[in-house]
Image (cartoon, rainbow, N blue to C red):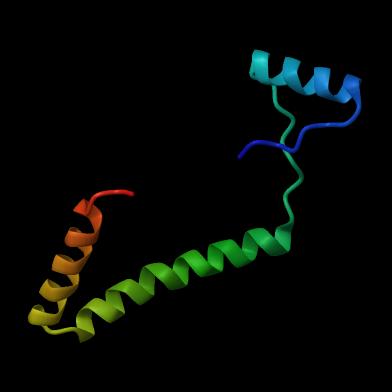
Length: 76
């Protein structure tokens, strides 16, 4: 994700040098946000398996066909 450009010339120059040399300063991690992301991922991994186990083979096939059709439809 690209960062918002700086208004200060010195900050812009510093940012460009960091990008050019590969030296980036890690942004501080918000622990609450990190915990929420991990929790959501765990729930998402479980939810997909539970949903799949409740569907019939025909329903899973229909969902897969719709997904494949959408994936291969021409981009506009």
